[in-house]
Length: 235
Image 1 (spheres, rainbow, N blue to C red):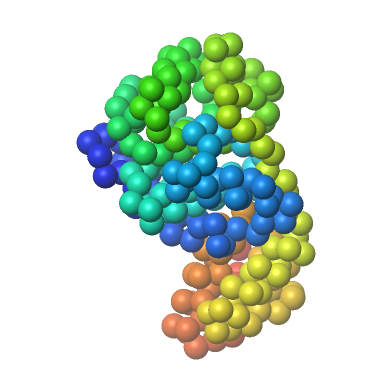
Image 2: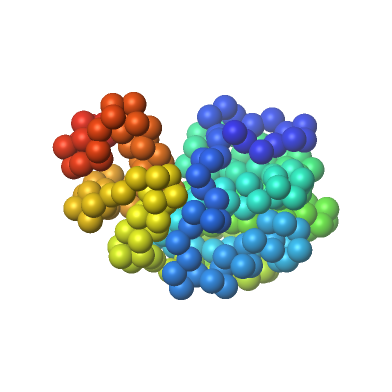
């Protein structure tokens, strides 16, 4: 579901993954990033923040985690993935300053699109004036986004800028194994490595796959083996 509880109109199809929460994120070398985001989401930390990392580094997971945490603190929030919104009018950013927390994902996709760059720039200014929290993530550092609006690049540098460090496969395997144990079943090393090498390596995606396999296993009364994974996931 989209965590919007104020009169803000959004296109359909934007929803938070239920499993995209801080407790499901493998921290690795990202301790400072996680603690900073948790404080910002709860309204006790940075007002602005930009963080960046590669495709499977978990940026989307973290922004959605912020929205879930904000909801727990009764703060109105919204998750805005530019990849989903880019074909809509940038006027969707109007009135977003009515919310306590706005999380924008995939910011690199607006580079060179004048109306979008200006819309985000003006949103920064309105959020600042309203004293609200704005968190933005992208695939590159601000200087490498190739934004045409220099003032927008400067806005991205207003708050903390942090890099999301990649999590190695062994850490992901341990996390998946622990989650499986919490749900009352075991996964062999062969199955765990198979999961990592098929589909997305994003942790939120892997956890959703784990949940799907758990339900399918209970329904079919079968152990989770590689052939069973292939059957359920269509790999």
